[in-house]
Amino acid sequence: MSKDAKKDHPPIVQISLDLPSIDEAMPTAEAAVRAGVDWIEVGTPLILGEGLVAVRTLRKAFPGHPIVADLKTMDAGFLEAEMMARAGATCVVVMSRAHDRTIEGAVEAGRKYQVSVMADIMLEKDYVAAAQRCEALGADYIIHHVGFDERHAEVGKSPLDELKKVVEAVKIPVQAVGGLSIEQAVQCPKLGAPLVVIGAPLAIQDHQFAAGPELENILREICERVHAQA
Image 1 (cartoon, one colour):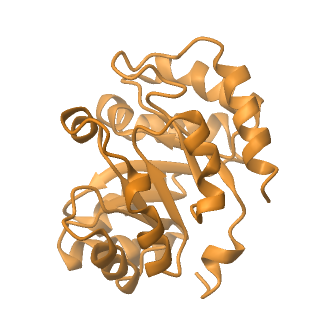
Image 2 (cartoon, rainbow, N blue to C red; image 1 turned 180 degrees about the vertical axis):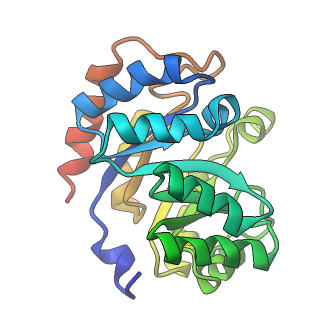
């Protein structure tokens, strides 16, 4: 990415398909695309449940949409990124707590297959240092993430707490994920995080991981408000 990647990145909406099967995920994906969602994320539960089949199925169904494979890679960075790229993913997720070589491997595969690498800094002691390290290793995006278990164990913890510090520390685009309300998510581009993720508990019920009521209308409103910030 260019030095101005963060500044130049348009606000986008990404739907996180945190569902265990492609049969359950597809209606959500279809509703999201009708509503104007830009990116489709194959969430970790879906990758665990369906593997590469989920990526291939979504790529076939939505050929014009970027597909994010939320692998949360901790090892074999090149191999896992390569597998997902060949299946049709356009972005892969590697954990910042992985070895440098793992992140570098994912980046190498990304360059080979024209796939972007998103570095997830979940559970880091120093978010800023982790984000800067991943940027130096070649990551294209930073995911500032408070995980499902973490935010339920530490009630009130939010990626917004240190978002400003992370955004200011790197030149690449940042995404804030985990437990945000709809209002908080929609405001993320104004806070310097242009990639807005909608998943549990906004469009997907927080514990059941099932499609929420009036999903399409909720997503359409979110898309309109986020895209208006371009």
